[in-house]
Amino acid sequence: MCAAIVKGLQSEVYVPITPEVVWAPVTKPLSEMVVALVTGAGVHLKSDKRFNLAGDSSYRIIPGDTKSADLMVSHGGYDNSDVNKDINCMFPIDRIRELAKEGFIKEISPVNIGFMGGGGDVEAFTEVTGPEIAQKIKQAGADAVILTAG
Amino acid sequence: MGIPTILIAALPPVARQNGAPRVAAPKVPMGANAGQPNNREMQTNIVRDTLKSLEEIETPNTIVSLPYEYVAKI
Image (tube, rainbow over all chains, first blue to last red; front, side, top):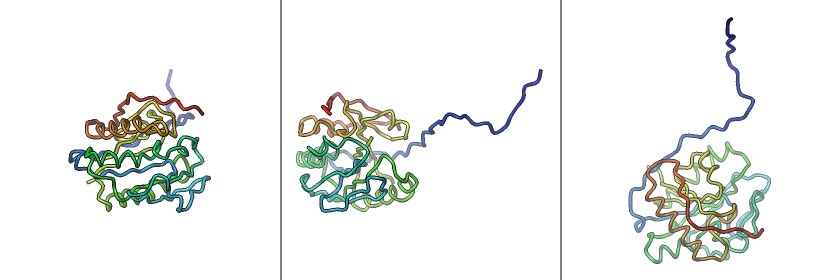
C-alpha cells in the first residue's frame, strides 16, 4: 500500500492566527506616569465629526481637560445605552483625573484618542490609523495607555 | 521605545486571540468595560486595578481577572 501525498492542501475551516505580541516594558512607577486613554468605543467630542457607522477608520483627539459632559459616542457595533448614561463606563476620563489628583498617577495625557473599532477597513487600521495614534500619543509625552474596546 | 499598554476587556478570549500584551478583565458586558454607569466606586476600582496590573504583569498576553461585576439591565 502506498500513501498518497498531496501538496498544498488547506483546511476549509478558517483558523485565526494570533499575531505576535508587541511588548513595551514599564520603565517608571505609576506615580510618575502620564496616562493616556485610547478607545475603540467611538467616543468623541460632541462638537467633533461623528463616525460613519457603516465603517470608519479615522480617529478623534480628546484633550485631557475635556469635560465628560462634552463627550459622546457614535458607534454602530455595540449597545450604547450604558455609555450614553455615563461616558466614564467606556472612557473613564473623570476617574483617571481623580487618580492623578490623589497622586496615584502623575497626570492624564493632554492627548487621548477615540476611534470606532469592531469592523471597517482592518488594513487601514493596522497600517495607517494605529501607527498615527501611537505617534500622537508619544508626541503628547504619555508613559502608558489604557485601552478600552471589545 | 514603545509605550506600555493595558486593555480593559469585556471579551478577554478575543483580546488573547488578538495578541493583546496585557489585559484586565472585570465581569462586565461590552459597552461598560470600565464598570457600571454612574458607579464611581466600581469605575475607580477597575481603573486603579488595571493600572496596578500594568505594573505587575511580566508575561506578554496575560489576562488578569478583576473582582468587579456589573450585570447590565439591557
